[in-house]
Length: 261
Image 1: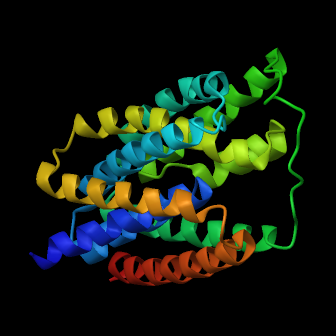
Image 2: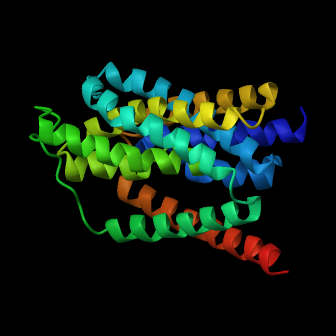
C-alpha cells in the first residue's frame, strides 16, 4: 500500500479514537497530521478534516444515542448558529496565507494544551439538573451564542470544537459529563456541514484519500467508544494536552521561520 495512504489511515484512526473517547480533540491533531505527515495542502486538509470529523462524530453520536446520551433538541439549537459561523469562518480562511493560518493554529494548540492541563486538577461534578433536563429560553440563548463562536473556529481552522463544546455543555448548560460527550458529537457532526460547504466553494478534495481517512476514523471511533469507559480520563487528558502543546510549539516555530525569512 502507498505510504501516503497508510499515513492517511493512521491520521483518521487518531481522530476517531479521540472523538470516541472524549467527544473532543481529534481534529486538533488532524490538521498537522494531514499537512505534515500526509502532505495535503492546508485548505484541502481543512476540508478533509471537517469531513472526517463530521462523519466520525455522526457515527459516534449514533452509538451514544443507543445509551440515551444524546440530547437532540440541544444539539439542533447549538448547531443552528454553528452552521452559519462555520460558513463565515470558511470564507475568512481565504483572506489569510497558509503559513499564517498554520502559525495561528499552532498558537491555538498551545492555548488548548495549557487550558486542558490547567483543568486536569479540577474535577467537574456529573450534574443531574440544568439544560439537559429542561431546555429553557435561557438555555437556548446560551447555546445559540456559544454555537456561533464555535462555528467560526470550526470553519476557519477545520476543527470540530469539541474541546469547547463539552466544557460548555457541562459548565454552562449543566449537562452530565456522559451526556455532554454524546451531545457534543451530534453538534460537531451538524456544525461541520457549514464549514465543508464554505470551503468547497473555493477548493476541491481528493475523494479517494478522503475515503481512506474516513475509514480510519470510523475504525478509531469504534475503538474509542469502547475504551471510553475503561481509561483514566485525567491521564488521557494530560497526555493529550502535552502532545498538543509540543506539536503546536513546533508548528509555531516552523511557520514563524517562513514568515520572517
